[in-house]
Image (cartoon, rainbow, N blue to C red; front, side, top):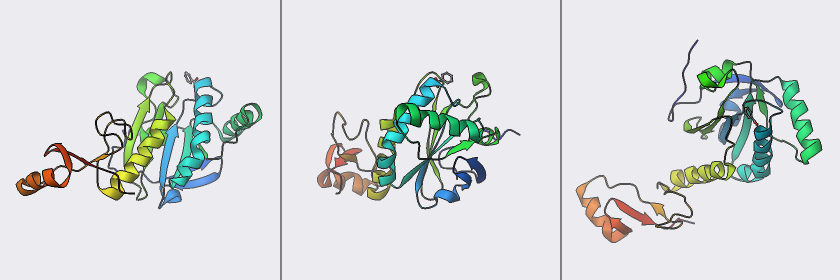
Length: 214
Ligand code: BEZ
């Protein structure tokens, strides 16, 4: 069956998965929390090992942001366990988040196997909000490890955008034009297009910005 890839704005498809922490039903298992589901091509591969190390290093920071992590590859649970034991023994890091042992069904539902990538999953990252809606999807090839600071920045950006009803500029919080300030959403009528120039700092009525609310 070809499900194609879910899109941003879709609800995360309901599924029960086998993980290193037992069976979990998604997205309910993380209801009320953000979660990041990320796939990697295979256990015991070098780039993936650096990625797991990097993700685990940032795990406490994700948890402070009410965000859980869950990995996935088309490998069996015993392989995930042996690999994370190797990481613990050799790199001195305990992988604390669950890893899905997929037989291919989850990969098919989420569009994780690229036709050019054989039978292993690409490096995909799904960002799911506390209501179970997919908010962003990143898709990387096997040869390029992900930037985990960017993944953390995206979670922070979503949380600020949602709570303060603003948009997040490029390279935030180090934007070249407005630093850590945020973008006021576009005017929706002629009157607010004029008044906003007095209310905010603006380059023009359609490019206004303001400081973050603390
Ligand atoms: C790696 O993680 O190193 C890797 C995995 C699959 C293909 C190429 C590299």
